[in-house]
Image: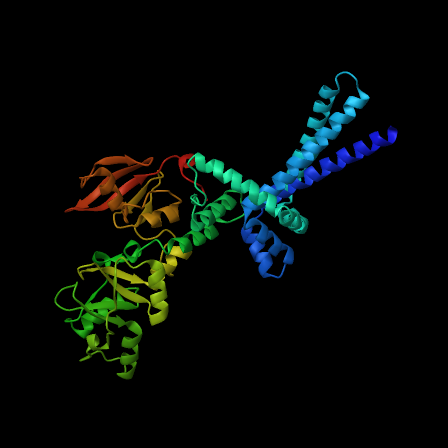
Length: 430
């Protein structure tokens, strides 16, 4: 009798241990980083390859582990019930229920799952081999269970394979980076860089281009002295050249070509045909994505393109630097201030902003969260939200910000004062 009781107790504790193994394995393998395992598999880890193969079919994995866990828990409870009825004539069922609830909760659920959460990757690698064998062994039974489950779900209107991921891969990466940033594991600059890379496929050149009203162009009909004066007064190295109409671009002059010719002429600009030094302009549609334009710049080994709309009208220009700034932030020249041009901080915490400043630049530089889905510039955002072209002095409130129109020229907002919400209300302090 004593031997039977001892064997029953040993069997019960072994079954509770097996149940804990199944519970911990389920938690570790469902919470493991798929990207981390893929990286380790690429470095030659055969255990990581096993983990990757297991989580590739999570439905079968979870089905096998739940089947094993349910079986051993029921078997352990049955043995414990039989044992208690032998030892206790009265109250055996109550004692068994309380004791098994305690042992299963602590040793078969909470403890192994807590360990799996604390050592997810390590535990997933350790259990990969035995779980793989167990899943393969129960594959026929699990397949039968899955068949029954999907038939029942079909009666409820749920179709197999009809589910769609809630987040795209880009959104998952962005969310993971934002989470690690909030936890202090990723710096603000790195978060912005990764976000900028992910945005390249969604943004168009029209979102980052220099508008034609802000382009520095050269009149091809001017004298060499006038053209030289315009070039020397600018910080740029490439200049669109026009004839008759500033939007009639006939070439692009690179300062390097001009300097080379001046050296050959020993610094004499007289009778120099500067427009003849210009290269053929390259026009790109305004709907071209930044990813496509970046690849085009690489293929053509160019840094400069003119942007046109669907009717062929000049919209502006885009450079390689404009695209790189979407990833790395503002690339300041030696003569530039830390705050980008067009943004002027005020002593009272407000900002005087030129209307042409892009919303994305404000968000990046000031850590704001203004919407840029319906407008590219801050002036465009105010007009879109107000549904009118506001007059100077008018004040609007959108998204927790206050916008005061400072100056308007014809139908264009030239400058406005922006009052941000309190610091604690702004999304992320960086």
